[in-house]
Length: 203
Ligand code: ZN
View 1: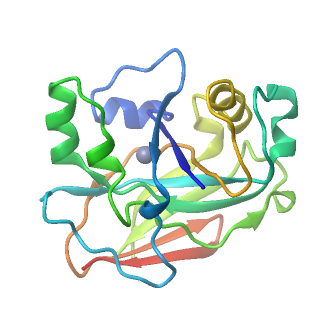
View 2: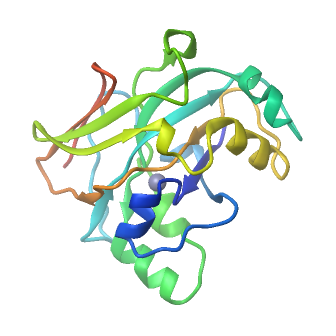
């Protein structure tokens, strides 16, 4: 499986990092080893002193697809979950300055924990899903999928025009504003609507 991520998919987050809004989705990938096993803590890696949380809705692909038309994209996933796109912001800034790829800042081990997935049929509309992240019991990020610059169907169509999607692939759909640093002993809890679906302890 592979993990495909969308960058700058919420205008307010693009603005907080002083990034322009892009005419097409900004895409990067994380390898399978970026998954964090359930209930495992996240260990801050040695190469960074500025690891940020980015809470994101995550789509799980249910079958193989290439050149998927936007109109049919909704048949390529049944489940939506929540995850954290951990980012070594200091490393990313260094790489961005040199116009180099972001992989080392984004794709490291354990950088993509995900929680329990929900069947999309429980939502009235996948374009109106509330989600949020709490750090040590206080809300730090809140989002609604209606604020995505590129909605889920557009992302699936766009990505699959370059990269074949396969069953079990995960798409991280971008983070809303409020990203921030984590420290050892922090506890992150992620929610879709009022359902608590993921806890990550920082070590
Ligand atoms: Zn992200």
